[in-house]
Image 1 (cartoon, one colour):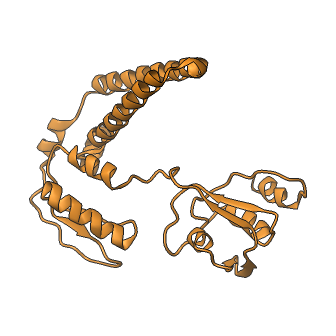
Image 2 (cartoon, one colour):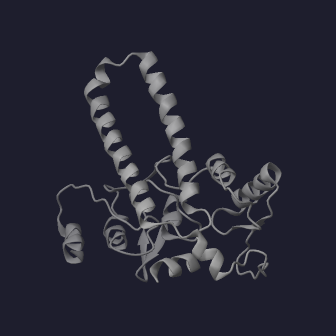
Length: 233
């Protein structure tokens, strides 16, 4: 419970607390930071991206004082920022995802991320695919074209049968079960793998990662709220 979580800070014994939100803007993490940031014996470890303007970013950037619940807290704890664990995709992964779109988009809007990174990604999308990519700056207004409007008949013609959806889900569950078996077997054989086997496994994993990105693109493309309404009806 929330009270149990807060009580951890009253216990003087050494401990590891795993908490969220990832950018320290809300939730129990703020209580943990309030009670531990000032302590030089504490270590705060970030494993995800910290957006500009957030409490987490202030701590990672080395601010010596931060405000939590209206109180100024001195930062004396050791701060670590582990790269590579964030769920955010890098430029190449995002470009590959965009490349998997079956129907060229009228516009692509970039609304999240560092300004320099957004500008660079927008230019890469334009030069690679020729799509109109817009780097959204703060509060902005855009007029969307009506070229993509569809009729109710168009929507109803795209509705997939429940049987087809169930077949897809079943196949995904089967793949998941097979991956669990492979993971278990890899755990058992890890000490006996040759360098050649390790290289082969890494290459296969890279291919799987690429295919997962393509699968994600296929699942999310042409997501239409009107189609959801038609299905629910």
